Length: 181
Image 1 (tube, helix red, strand yellow):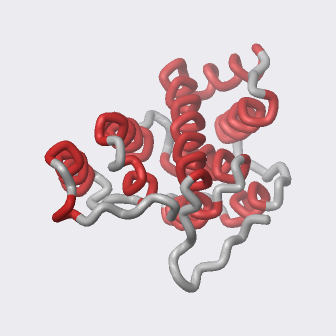
Image 2 (tube, helix red, strand yellow):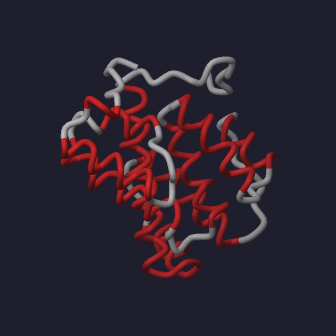
Image 3 (tube, rainbow, N blue to C red):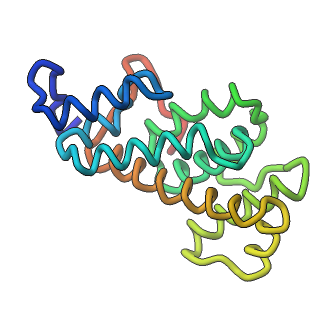
């Protein structure tokens, strides 16, 4: 990583407060992007809170939320993000065929209109940096206004995560091999 990991005993009070908030929260550990964010504790405290909401409290079902995160990781070719969230997506019940299609930049076969709305909306938002009214309406019809806000939040937050991981050259754990090219 291009930034040094700050040892717990070398953290200032603000850094330690963020560190403790992350460890005592739903994550239970400090993930790699937050290790970089600790260099700016004011940013870190807000970023970690947003991330905790998106990962654990989104109105979208976990497997479809994870699909949106994987779409984002793939868009940014964020090797660590893909590595981490592939496992989380599988544990949430996202079918390996869907995951592999996203990895291979292919449209997956999805089981229903709600899943398709999430895939289409997230894909268009990243690819075109805009969403048609028809896609927006399909997303609202399937998941409601809160659902569409949560989806945009997931795409935006995981863009930030992917940029952090890519910008600070966060590598994969020892022995792990990237699936992304």
